[in-house]
Image 1: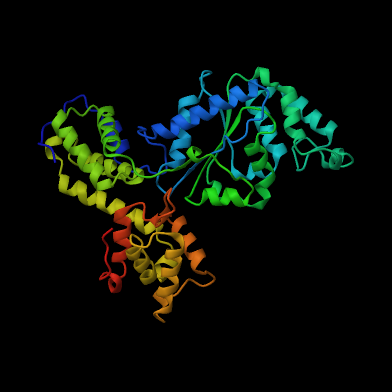
Image 2 (image 1 turned 90 degrees about the vertical axis):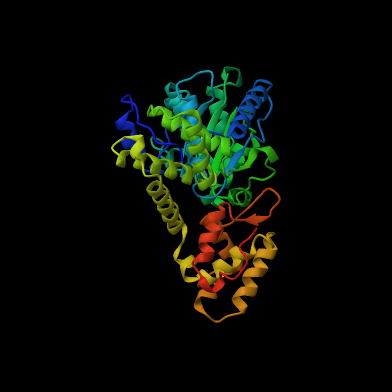
Length: 419
């Protein structure tokens, strides 16, 4: 830890108090990293506008950010909104829930309300005239369209939109932002396909965020052949990015530590957090807690207490990830976590689960009621314990979480925990 010194009177105590609480469910004050992901969004938005102006379909621009809980997927979507809001040189954006994607008319209506609110009434009138609504739209009675509905193509919703907003009038793209996309189902297929195939010829770019099986969920709902570069598994930040976060947070509070001290402190938090965004936020909060606890005097900060509090935050996050099924099957979970580095392909992990459950009659080794081995592996993925990388090799995205899960089953601790 850095040498101790007195904090200057210019320190912002209100910000220290604010940052001393781990607001991990809220957007952080500082955003670092993810430059490649932001570049991918920019590239797709620019290309979609080019195709629109050329009168071509704007297919293939679907972007997916997937990863374990706490990786910063939702944070990335929020950052796009912060970057673009109120700035005409950037793409337009429309955050919607997955529920809106069940009905293409509702989505088209939301788009009109976003980009051309003055045309909403005319859009409703055109929908009634064409009789193409497939759902219940406020202000459009279902009996008004029932007589002609079946004779119209579903893409007419976007044809109406295109009539109101011709391609020549689009000078920037519109990004549809959807979080928790892994929860989609078969009833989302129509809308998802329309967006992905881009037959409407409009510069609409779908950007989805969800857990590490989001691509599989999209494939089941008809969205396939995603561009390789457009699928990004969000994981740990680099040491430099973590260090930048700590430095910027301290800078906001005007804490005048020396460059060497700052580098040492930032490197320590980067290492202990393992670059995991959730832990980076909570461990930095522990530092501010320590500053507040020392009555805002740097010389009084007890860094050993800060480290203990950070460790508590980490363990609390692991406990929150550990479902009832993982608690009840603690030995099975620990054994799989211990074995995964050596047998990381999907079928190998499935085989390991089957083999382990066959070796013992103990409840902690059995599969949860109603689950088979594949369902159990998917459950571990949703809890953030395991996920595949781009080569389909499964591993734990946070090494300390793997260690912690193994430690919950002393019977399995003799298993190797080295990667």
